[in-house]
Length: 464
Image (tube, rainbow, N blue to C red; front, side, top):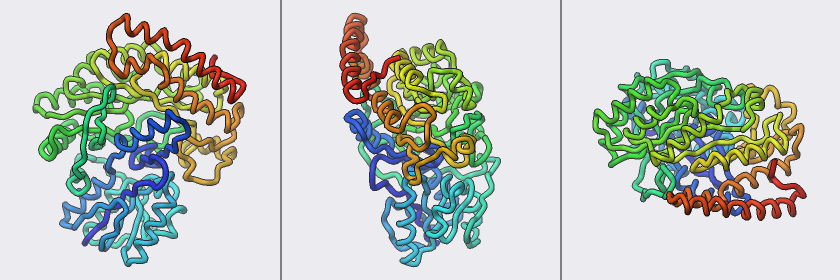
């Protein structure tokens, strides 16, 4: 059997799918000079192949089937399996219609197909509901998938074959950028666990299946296989909480070093699950970049959406230690929580600047179907186009801020964070104390200019 695995590039904007936003995906349509530059970098640094499809490729290859990856091409095949997303579902459905017209049985996998099957039923022969491996194993053994196919989560993740990348990864230039851990050209994703043990009401990472973790030995075996197949690979751990178990993270770092694996990697985690000793061990094993959620400076706002706040002292301790070790840091912020107002968002923007992470990502709160937040805010959602649930577009009636104000604050956050001399000094790794002080002094007139521009647009500056 010849199976086509389809991960479509988006027609508009910079789209990330697969495990991003749990699988719903995100889309950045640049709306300012700063986001245009960020989008250009994201287009190459965040264009990462699908680990979900790579697992499917591993299962099909294990059973002797012919696997072909597609970025939109439609070569002859018996079956096509399309990676679904919320932000690009119309494009995916249209591609499936064309494939079926050519006689290819077509199905969808992913969180969106599982939680919003109505978007794809009329365009598919089958939908895989849940993590795909169990259903794909049935398919590989000769079963015919039809209609809605429930795929049970596999408890023992070590039992799965490793993802197969030789079908999808093509040679592309990769080179380091100053201040960025991930190379220009991307990397190879790896899932050391699935699901998330936290209870944030707005996060889709925990709505498909429960939290499970692979053994350290199994992860090390996959890393060894990557090092055999690729020269000094850059690995992107896609777990939303990589260091939830400190001892496990330390054992993984020790295992990488003891086996002499020549690789570099990045991870996403909570900053209160880190300490300098663990960071030193991970850095020695190849950690070069780390992302984490700060979300809001207000602990009260975070508690109301089920997120445990992290003390400011811990933020500063870890970010400063990462800076000393040369580990790039990316902090995530969410603007527009139900209890946010202009002042609280302005305070969060100020806090992002004061923390001084290498990079910052700001998004608007988006109520995603299947999350507890959706049950709360669903009646207030005014956006009817699901593709605009992209993380950058207002979608619901906020109690304190208009859609225009939210989009303005989002743009101001990017401008104020990136368009300042001190960030350029950090990006250029200026270390001389006198030079750094000079750059920081230059921030003051630049901030005044930002305030004047904001006043001209909104009659209100983004200051607390």
